[in-house]
Image 1 (tube, rainbow, N blue to C red):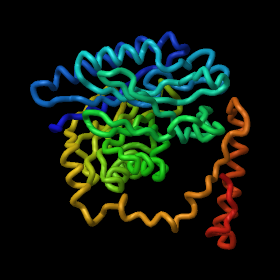
Image 2 (cartoon, rainbow, N blue to C red):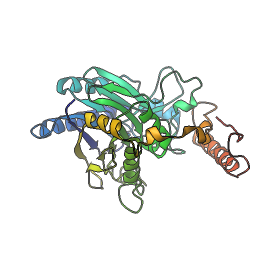
Image 3 (cartoon, rainbow, N blue to C red):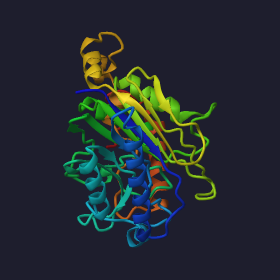
Length: 343
């Protein structure tokens, strides 16, 4: 496999009030993808394009009923087919910005979902495990009893093994580690990560976390962030800073922090990564893990949603209960294998 280039593509869209506005956004993202592929063709072979969270529809309503009535869509849909047509024409792969997904099998649930699409069509989807609570009232696969699908899918493609997670998921090292341990070589971050936790010191969580997840998993990171202005989504502004990071945590390319559409591209060398993983004896934290001593991974703090739809009031109650459990198990007297289980 020869070296190819990945593009982190950030958007700056105003909100839409209903799903009829999705088409215009897809128009623009397809245009950005073609411009990137064709414009860089004399220099680089761009094969992977990543777009931000909420690029199709931001969750501007505060109940699941409103989201399903106005914004959410099933997957696949007409928009995923448009991306598939583009991928077939240009031989590329697109990690879509997120959709608010209304799955027919869960009639009172909304997932925050990103799709991987390639020349063969819709390859698969990832549903956000860790919504940004309490403001996001989307369900997590963790909330669904006997959830039948793989919650951390990794897709084997001709450009490597790809795994995606969404925005707040990346503040949970165990979630990204799960993707890496399932074989992901390129970790894709689809985000709407707002100020002040952006790409500017002293609160540059965006940059710090992306670099850390790359080096601790010996993987590439391709991270696309919203570059939306505050007037679109008060009180939040989204600082962009979209980036590509190599397996040693080096930033290969990064958009200047600040609002606006921007695209940055950088090389991905999958064969080099595989050789690095095979050769490395030091700093191979995937292989050096001593999992048996980490009892916290056997206990989830936040309980699954007991009922649907999810509400902000119910989320706040579950958060209070989770904080009490964390305090109890962190008191010193209830730690270790006999600590309270609360999966």
